[in-house]
Amino acid sequence: DKAMEIIGKILASDERILQNTDGRQPQVVTDKLNDFTIDVIARFWSLNSDYWQLRWDINKRIKKELEAAGISLTLVPRQMAIPEANAT
Picture 1 (cartoon, rainbow, N blue to C red):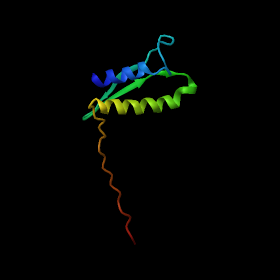
Picture 2: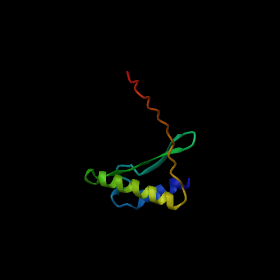
Picture 3: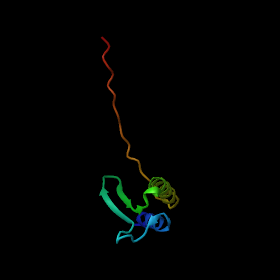
Picture 4: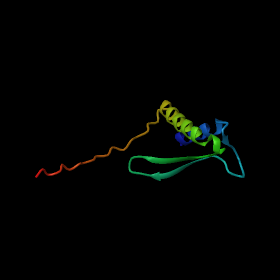
């Protein structure tokens, strides 16, 4: 709940994010409950001209503010095995 609250405040505070446009408001929702993580989606609307820079800025700010609040962004470790080609 704390993470979702922080993300919601971020979305509410950026003037490039359209608030209550045609009945649509920024959303922060739980998408998946995984074994070791919970996937959260932040959904918002903006002008087309603002979209990409806004998306990058919001992602960076979310990471920074969650870490500052002591919420870790867990990366699930992956193991990759590359078989060696048989030399003939």
